Length: 247
Ligand SMILES: [Zn+2]
Image 1 (tube, helix red, strand yellow):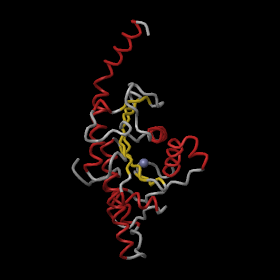
Image 2 (cartoon, helix red, strand yellow; image 1 turned 135 degrees about the vertical axis):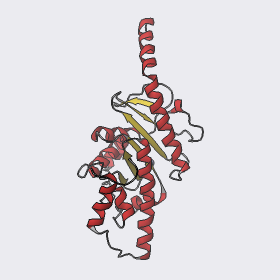
Image 3 (cartoon, helix red, strand yellow; image 1 turned 90 degrees about the vertical axis):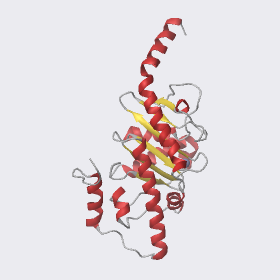
Image 4 (tube, helix red, strand yellow; image 1 turned 180 degrees about the horizontal axis):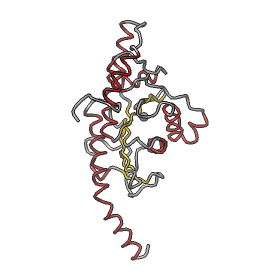
């Protein structure tokens, strides 16, 4: 690289630094929250956030312990998947995140975990039925299960194919009404306007997965939630005339 090109590159990196610093800090916070709220064991999970104006995503580095992770370890990539920094490798699930960001313009943050109750439903290959208002506060629909991947998809471009299966499961109702999905025999992916909201959705999903399993344990024929209650609970929190919480 010529000295001039090097100078230009450094100048542009310097110019972009403040925005990426904040993005990195937010993504670090969401990743470190994963073990803190009990959703993640070892390094089995990841959080990312997109800055659509800058055309970049920030994501957890691959295989780095959450306790020692620092903001500079968070990997920033272009939305085409090309790394902007050299050094730390991004999460192996990065192509999955990129496909979901590419498909849904209003997704700003994504969290993936192997949290036990949600993962149990994924391994049982069952969607999570809508049994109560706790679930309806998150989504007015069952939490869907992705289709099985073909052998070819698993062999050739596994993480990208996983992203495409997620998009297929969500595209009909959209990511606002379906803020989480269960990847078959794998675990949940959740999203929101940013990594923090995606994290909150992942926490809520784990709670409703547990409640649904306990409910079916007590009463295998427990009824689905009344349709009027489904809409009421979802819309009062997320609808255009939402009135839950402080605004
Ligand atoms: Zn996983």
